[in-house]
Length: 358
Image (cartoon, rainbow, N blue to C red; front, side):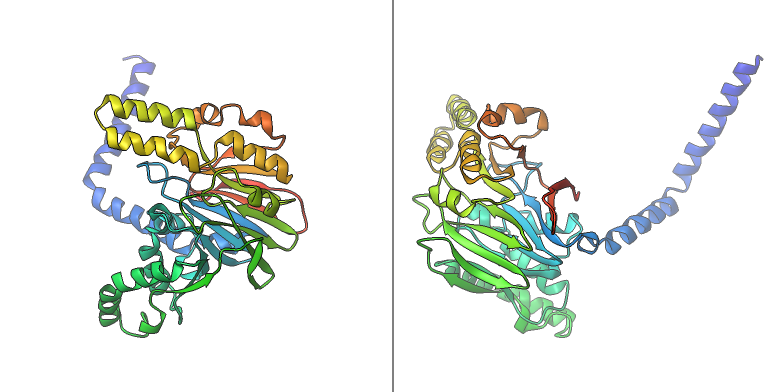
């Protein structure tokens, strides 16, 4: 036997022994791997390592259209170490946890409007905030008039479950007085209006155009010289452009009309005419990527990030087709947002860092 063949035989033998051992000892090996993974996940705290400043993360960049890659609308805003959430679509609470952000430390939530894809994750978020941290009061939820009805509905829907949790875990872990949420309503502002001002963070609400869905608002966040705007759902809006003046970062919803029309045509062809008509209907109360870029240019923001992506882009390879030339209408960077993505605006600088918390 040649030297080369002997070496190959030894390699094959060692590999075979390793594979056999992995199969024979898969239970203890699996338990060891599980323990290591759980230890890392339990100890992870994304907030701990953030520099002072304003930070934003995407816990949902999707829409009502089903997507494996995108949860429904949800944006996390962090000012210093204080954690806030804008909207709570389905899957949002799960994504927040996967981003290494503790649901139990959510200080407050801001709702832009009451479409289902912006609120249907409220229940799990309220529950996890309550059970995960020993909070002594319900989650404050700011929103335009109507938020009282929404929160009352979720509180009623979860009342029985809340009782089960307290009966099982005890009042020290799940105090009844801290369950659910408390609505803090404000009137639809005629001009940008400050609705939250504490801990160095100022939150300004402004009306947007999502007719016939009214009231609908967006929010501007200012903290230590850094600023970002979350548009909510809107067609092109002059009030948004005014509220966004000079902001570092504009997060704007976006719908590609040509792609949605193609989707509608294919649905018609498949005999799904009712859904096809709904697709055509939604075009007129959203903004295209080009229109979002126009607003970013008018407002003079540093960077534009698109969220509430319609239709959902399953791969970044499709982003160029989705943008459809929007880059030509705004001089700054345009990013198609993804779940887990974050943007960091450190205090005392003009930089915007980005990455993923997934």
